[in-house]
Length: 248
View 1 (cartoon, rainbow, N blue to C red):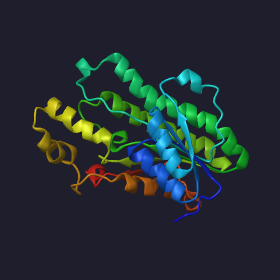
View 2: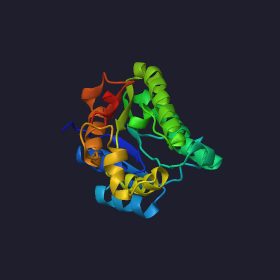
View 3: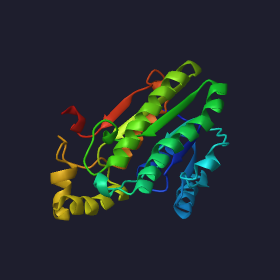
View 4: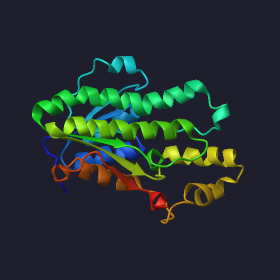
């Protein structure tokens, strides 16, 4: 495993799921981790486990992020939510909230982190996108739009920050075994009019060659590699981990 001793990492949405797995994996490689989440108790629990720092933050409050300064070496933009609805029934404020959380907040955190990274000539930005940053699915207008936007932000960041020793990449998993996906099963069953027990095989995994959910630890392992010194020439990329979905 790559040694990240002496590096500071910030992971958003890190109280559970992919974020918690990334926080644990980065800490296992020696990084000091800040666990950021709106779930105050969850963030505190993970931070205590890792001997890191908890940051209770509502990333929808973007005004509070505008003057933020981050002295972090590794930034993992992971926080996200999902909403399943046909476009004609999609609440406009809900659409805005998803874009704020998954595009505007990452932009502001990148903006806050780059001066420190530039000053030291080293930095790693890893954006947890999705196969939906590359492909679309019905009933996910806000999520698909947000993840496509995050892909663009990541690429522009890569172009601007490359001369300063900073990389920016996306990780694009398919459906990951997290509470977010568990909730989708119920919502997808209602949207498609099928029993919940059929959602996994007939809807979530229908395009995948490998018929299982991605494990959070698998995503975290890729994040750690992208954060490592060995990945210094990897930037502006999107790494799929979707069981072959995007190969179609």
